Length: 297
Length: 297
Image 1 (cartoon, rainbow over the protein chains, first blue to last red):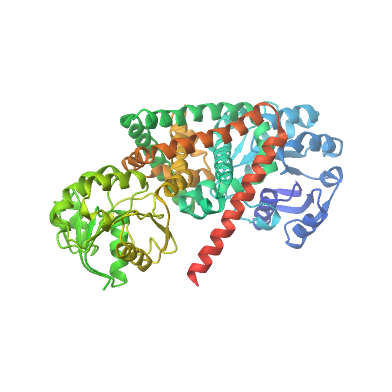
Image 2 (cartoon, rainbow over the protein chains, first blue to last red):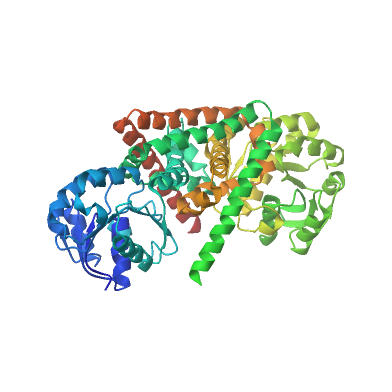
């Protein structure tokens, strides 16, 4: 068995789906949940996602072989601090946060000799729904999981977490912390900002109800991610602030190219940008199609 | 029979789907196609979408009871001009353009006494795919079609086009030209600009292939519309330029609120905007869900 005793701190969509996937693969023994809300945790027990729970993180991680932090980014440092004294020597700790630079800083502050047992991680999967009720064992199948090991991380810790994610059906990739944060700012954090800003922009217009009534399928797809969890995204913004601000600036200059072309009747510039974007998007669709086909073979 | 002889100028996704829907409902007799590409038009005949075709628009509209313009917006004026002398007195002309102000100007310039037989229209439906091969009879079901009649438009012309669209399963709404253009700028044209700008922004980064490989489902949904037809969107931008520039400015101020909040550590402002947007988006999903349920009953 890969993990005898697994502690999941934060039993929501991601934490819950991970527990379900590992259970389905018979890759873990006892699963201990931890969180702040007793009702939610009891729900997770009732759903068979976890075996038992503690509200106190120190008790939850006691004797655990693997500890997974699946909580909002802002809580990382205090949680690591709180569990520090109760961890087994050979425990492996990992997290699922969408920004890695801030998590690594938190770990360096909070963890002492356990730093070598810490493997920062980020599964590129999720839906706009939240909570253990939305969790399912197949969430990570054919999705990427990025691990950003520290220079201090031991090979055995990295191997265990790599295997853990592979067991869920995910494809594991190792990246540098800065690489992760730059890429995710562009492909995930920036689009979320655009979706939030767009919906807020429309909601602020006169006749807002009428306006939403005329929105077509494209709009629904485009703004789906604006239904994501506000607190979670608030934390991500501040955790990946530097890269996100850079991405916002880059985006601005491209949107300004479009605006100027429309303003100045620059037909060629507009057509060129649209054609270039369409080509890149179509290529992305092809690659994605290929990857999804490969993964089902 | 609602329409004995129907001329479709531009037999692509929209024109082709309209012909298919009316045929399915046995609401039209002969369907004449018109376009610039003989191969595409022959394909439309082979697929049973149209009965015959002409490359010359004057010949295509001869004896037609209804003429539907389903061509790029930039061609509207010259096409109306070219058909002007060959139209039956009691013909009804309509179009499917995504901007209505420019279409109305074109009609006022090109159409003489037939202006009263013109009904500007816009079905809020489509996919990012193009061409008659992508057309299907159900495209307009449970979707809205906006008609923006002129003061000169006769009731009989408006009634016929309203019935035509209702026959396809669409819900027909009448709006003023300016209302249409403001609403569509916000719900459709602006999101397309954002998707194009985002994809172009990512495609311009170093390691672009790697970056697209890390994009998750949210990104795929968000940028789907960037695969739309560049020439079509080029035309829409210039046709609805005034309202689109206004919408871009409004969007900018909301994105700037987010950027400033991140820059200035204004946790409350960020959380407030995200929560407000989520609420509006969730409400939109509920309404949409209700409407779709209603329409299938």
